[in-house]
Length: 276
Image 1 (cartoon, rainbow, N blue to C red):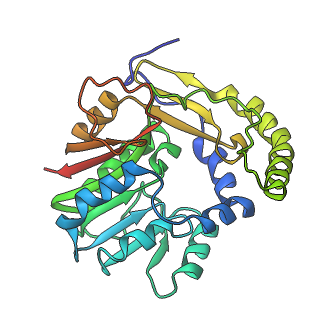
Image 2: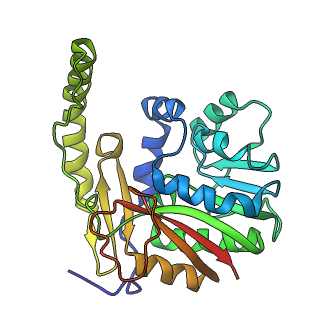
Image 3: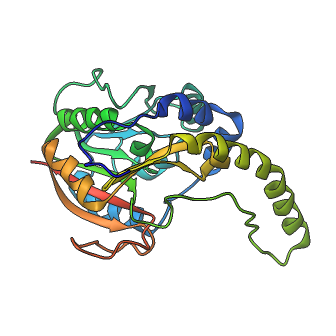
């Protein structure tokens, strides 16, 4: 059943579902191996904001094991990274000794004074792991800690894209190396039962509305539930929080996405919003 996006909040307790998955040792190991940008859209967004924030304070939300720390420290040494999962914070500190990494929830940035940062980053669709009420609080808190004219760079899943409604399936990346192919096949087959079990269990909280949805997603053996929003809905949320959306990049090509574009082939967007 469809409903207006403001009609009610999600019924799913995303924290209770997602936090244990982020804390799993195998999940942390995945994040420890990550390096560089996730996709062309993230590269384009970083290139866009970098000249305007170089040398100025940066807050990096949802740092995981420190992939974005590597990307943002060259932009500014005045850097703080936060994550709400203790296991990720410890991994990030180990990977980046001497860098300020704190355990903190993006819904409460009370440790930081008003207008502290020139740039806030929330990468890897991290904001989608929070429910609608929490998402509103994140946007308000980010707006508060940004200096006037400060930028908020974040990514979010596309409600109209191909990722919504993923199903477990066997997908083994082909290689001519028989050892690698055998190892990939073994990993996929071993993970399939957990993926099927998680998908069956967590699909019970799926809900779809006109401009947003809450759905079980394929990452980490279908162990998480995330929000998907349309381009128009996410821009509405930004306006409501006091932001102006400057630019949106698609994930696959790193190209700006204009209003009214056909977005059905875009898995997620990278938003650059400015505090008015």
